[in-house]
Each structure stands twice: as C-alpha cells, then as structure tokens.
Image: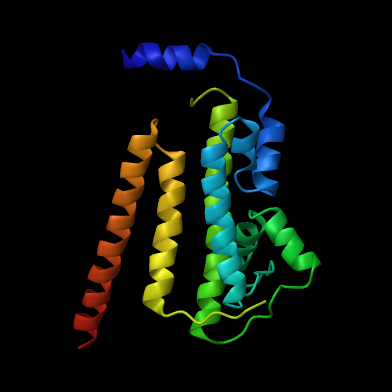
Length: 139
Length: 61
C-alpha cells in the first residue's frame, strides 16, 4: 500500500514550475502558498513570520553580518546572516529603510536578534512546504 | 519603531506560539490534524520551558 502511494507520488508530474513559487515564498512569507491557492495556510505563515520578525525589530535585535575568523565565529555569523536573509522582503526592507540595529549588550536585544533569525528559519520551512506542494509531493 | 521589553518567559512563550503555528501549518494533511499537532507542539514547548527552568534553578542551587 505504502509502496503504491510512493510510486504514484514519484510518477506524478510536477504540478507547476517550482522556481517562481519558491522565489515568492522567500520574498513574501506564505506567498508561495497564496500562489498555490492555499490562502488560509499562507495567511497563517505570513502572520507568524511577520509578527515574529517585527517583535525582533521592536526588541532592537541586531542583524547578523557575515564574518569569518575562528570556526565558531564563522558558523554563528554566516548562519545568522543566512537566517536573517531568509525572511525575504522583511529583511531587505529593514536594511534598505535603515531599521537595522547595531549590536548592543542586553538580554532583550539578544532575544530580538534570535527572533529575527528564527523568523527566517520558519520561512525556510514554509518555502520547503511550498516547494513540496508545487512539485506534487504533497497535496 | 516602538521598543519592547519582555521577560524571558514572555519571549519563550511567544516563540513557542509562532513556531507551533508554523509547524502545525506545514505538517499533516487535514486542518483538524494540523490544529491538534500545533497545540501539541505548543504544549511540548511549554512543558520543556518549565522543566528546563526548574532544572536550571535546582542545578544552580
């Protein structure tokens, strides 16, 4: 039974080109789901990622900039930068409009920086989900 | 841009809430299953938060 289902999924042609869906899902959290006619799920993803990102900004969280040095520094700053960048337009607008905060000491700022990265990571999960829907691996 | 000052507990609860919503939305096949999974994830986050909090308090002495 499970083998039949897997064979059907593997044999099913992609529902549509996934490039545009994933690009839109990156730029606008939940955008891929809107494009794939899943507005309810898209709205929940948009609200969750956007609110989390805005809370991070209001806590004066700093954006990571890629830095190299020792291994730990490279991993933290480069991966943090990728996490920030994964929020798409939210990140780009924040940087372009000058809302990006300098790194400051304090636990609330630290929580804010983590919220900004976590919003991007949740958007990556949403992008993967949109990709799976677009390629027919998921209904 | 207004500034927010939240406690560690409030921040952790907010993180648990939004992460649970996303995890619920992207997994499972029906809305009922997604809702149940999201609530279960949130409950696990809260239990882990309180459990680890007590563990740190007791470990710290």
